[in-house]
Length: 293
Image (cartoon, helix red, strand yellow):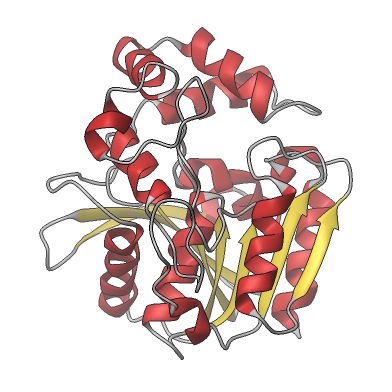
């Protein structure tokens, strides 16, 4: 499988947002790839290139990421998942599974909970919790409002400044310390990934959406859960690297507890927040076996 089989396309949604996406030719098992924060479909490139050709792959740029538009600000994870629903309806995608990575895992859970039966299987890769992803200040205090998150001097302001000034060195330093703690992409690919990061147009909004996401039955320290996790009746595979410094073991345990029924869990050995770079073959083996069953 090479790049000639992967096509970059776009489609306009009823809400006037344009969603860019990559489509890999061939295959009969439909899979929708949903990226995380600070990324876009670009960061799925190794999966698009190397995943077994029996899978037909679609990788979206969510609203405000990559080549997609950002006319209206998002305020919740549901805004993303509703875009995904409009997208799959427009392209006529049926009988598909979702792989959600990090923030994309929250989007995938929201989608599957809101539209039961629309998605066949769900893979949560290094996913945010069913109870969200808390946003704290430099002193560890949980922030509560979008305004506070946007004005945060510890994460939002410096990363947004790096985006605005194309400070690739700063962004690489962040990723080196938190994500690429074992393996690193080659220099050319790393530069491509960093160039992709600065296309993000919704950083503070995503932080706030994750901070206020809660589909569990529990209070997450900020808001009570809406209980939508009870709608997740589909087969679920939960994957987390044992070296992940972004998504904690507790967050993964919350997912497993909140779903409240047996789901498949695999710990990815010697992997951080990007198993695509740390152990692509092992990652694809877990995913392919689950989706093929």
